[in-house]
Length: 84
Length: 195
Image 1: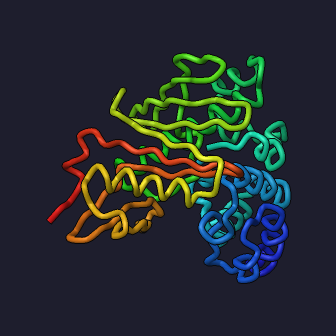
Image 2: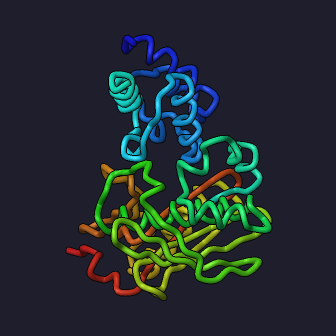
């Protein structure tokens, strides 16, 4: 999957949990889920689960550990898709 | 801090896979066998959040989504309080929780009875921040007006004042209608750099 396509899906997944709509308008690879989008930490669990469902991958605990930005998520998704 | 009313709206912890991402099999058992599983979920969650914040503070670590690296054990639980221990990468943190029908607040400390003082507010975070400044300025005899709340690269807050005043043995937390501070003033003289 292309980065652009992954980003598009990711943006749709993240949207319902965003608390800062202005920061969401600038959604980019550098966007930080907590710092920029102010997503509640418990909702990050939902995002991980939604990503697993949408991309049909399993995100292990070590990968989840570092999923703080959009770029982190994109890299994890790419790696997991390659491994399949 | 967990605002229970908001948590019930924001999070569906019964969703498939949710508990497994956060809790060990032993912790999941505490939840499934609890008379009030909703409260148990958020109690354990707040213990993990508090313990990781204390761990982050001691080792100056960046934020991580590593709930499974923290193992909770409950020592004592009553209807309004809980005390427990959380293991984080070989370190033990002692937690104290206040449980009401509206919120659960947990603070964590490295040694028992280290003199942690909490303030919980049904208000925006600015009230908790003001009170934190008030207590700090009174204790260290510095002018409250010169204290500035800042965040370091790992997003942990600290207070900075004139002449190199620096204090960071505290934590701020907020969720929904509630916000809180937690600070330790015992044996903290060494952490205050006063030039």
